[in-house]
Amino acid sequence: MFDNKETTDINQLGEFGLIDYLTKAVEITEPSTVMGIGDDAAVLDFKNKKTLISTDLLLEGIHFDLRYVPLKHLGYKAVQVNLSDIYAMNGRASQITFSIGLSSKFPLEAVEEIYEGALIACKKYNVDLVGGDTSASAQGLIISVTSIGFAENEKIAYRSTAKEGDLLCVTGDLGGAYVGLQLLEREKQIFLENPSIQPDLEGKDYIIERQLKPESRKDIVELFEAYNIIPNAMIDVSDGLASEILHICKASKVGCKLYEEKLPIDPMTYETAREFGLDPTVCALSGGEDYELLFTVPQDQYDKIKNQLDITIIGYITEENAGCEMISKSGHVHPITAQGWNAFKNNQ
Ligand code: ADP
Ligand code: MG
Image (cartoon, rainbow, N blue to C red; front, side, top):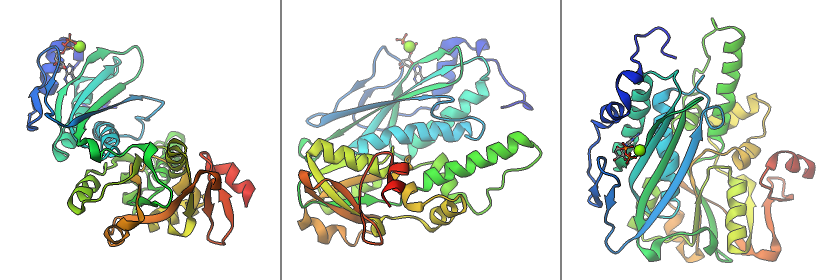
C-alpha cells in the first residue's frame, strides 16, 4: 500500500492536526444539525420526530481485506452499510459520526482516501458528518460509524410487526455481493501465488461493485413516502436473505412461504455463481452484504407494489405454526435455515 508513492507520516500532524486536516472539507447541510464537528458533542434537533441511531464496527482482517479493498471504497462502504440500518427502519438518515483507529503502517494519504470515500457517500446521501474520534491502533485499521436519522413515529418499520397475510418483498437483486467476493478472493489467491499476473475481472463490474461499493436504499424510503406505502415490518439484507427472513418471522411470531422462482438474481450473479460451482439460489439466500431492504406490506398494498420495477414480491407471511419454508422451483418444500449451505443440500 502506497509503497511507490511519497507519503506523509501522520505523527508530523499530531491528533488535532490530523482531525483538522481530515475534516476541513466537511460541510453541514442538514437542517437538523445545530452543531457539527468542533465541540465536545454534536447538537441535533429533530423537532417532533423520533430519533434513530445505529452503529457498526469494522475491523481489518475481520470485516475487510485491504489486499483487494481500495481505501476510498472502504470509506464509502463503511458509511453505506450504516445508513442502510436507518433506511431499514423506514427513516431518513441525516448525520453520521466517523471514528478511526490507525496503526503505524498508514500514512496520511491512506486516511485521506478513506475520508474521501466517506465524504462522497455523505454528500450523495445528504448526510452531515458531525463528529468522530481518532486514535492510534496497535494493529490494523479500525473504523466505526454511527448513523443518526429520524422518522415519524407511525412510519417506523420494526422487525416485530409483520402480520399474517402480508406480502414478503425485497428490493433490487440478491447474491451479487457474495459472488463478487468469491471473484476477488480467487484473484487475490492467484496474485499471492504470482504477483505478476494482473487480476482478471473483465466484464464483472456489476458484482465487483456490489461487493466493494454497495448503495443503501434511500430511494426506497423515498418511494414509500411518495406512494404512501407503510411497510408493516422491515430489515436490511446484510447477513443474507434467509437469515433476515428468520429475524422478521421470529420477532413478529409469524411464519412465511418463500418462492425460489421469485428470487431476484442478476444474470451476471447467476452465471458467475455457476462458474464457481455455486448454487445461485444458495448465494441469494445466504450470501449477505447486498444491503437491499426486505419488508412486508398488507395485501391491500399489492397494486402499489406490483409495478415497482425494483421491488419483487417473493412470498407471503403465514401464521407461526406453519414455519418458515421455501417452495423450490421443482415444487419441493424446504425449511428456511440461516446457514443455508449444508442444511439445504441435505434436504434436497
Ligand atoms: P474529545 O477530546 O472531546 O474526544 P476530539 O479532540 O477527539 O475531542 O475531537 C474534537 C472534535 O473533532 C469533535 O467534534 C470530534 O467529534 C471531532 N472528530 C474527532 N475525530 C474525528 C474524525 N475521525 N472524524 C470526524 N470528526 C472527528
Ligand atoms: Mg476524541
